[in-house]
Length: 209
Image 1 (cartoon, rainbow, N blue to C red):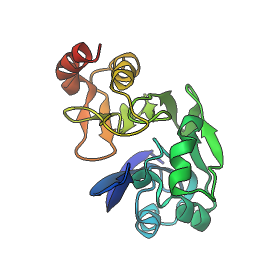
Image 2 (image 1 turned 180 degrees about the vertical axis):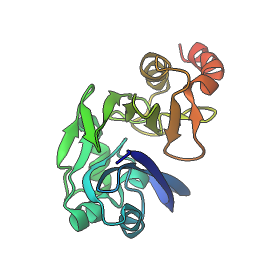
Image 3 (image 1 turned 90 degrees about the horizontal axis):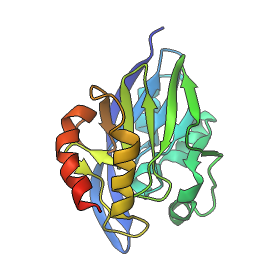
Image 4 (image 1 turned 135 degrees about the vertical axis):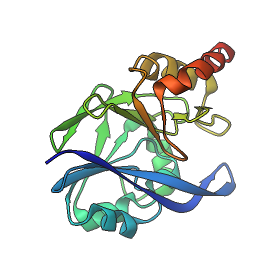
């Protein structure tokens, strides 16, 4: 069965540094008719389970540990038995939301996750958060960027645990090296491509150093 990418949007709040904002999050499901992984279990575990449609969930992969990307992860894990995977550098952020429930495993740079025969490579891309990662699948010509790269520029770096020069380095060294036709599937908003973002990112890179 052919691997495919399913998408749903969930709504909730993002809270950090004493502020709270309403947000819509993209949840990405990669798999076939029998198995899948979820990238960023945001807000609504029941909606994500419904989108899975009875498929075996192999893993819940967190691109980073801001609460809006992980708030539904424990409930989804409990309902499905799937492990929660996070980069270890984001544990301090994770513990702000889930102090009594640790992730089940840690993502490492260069690690390969395989689902339905398709490989996704973990790219550690700190800046928006210390443990932010992107997931690149050459067979799917897609990179899942979480909040590292959006249509129109880098993710926000104005709050705790973030750093603008670091996110610029991550985008330059880990994302702009990907083929221009690579689809960029983001944590919020509309998708784009590496090629579409490259010209304006040159300006961001110039400002980052």
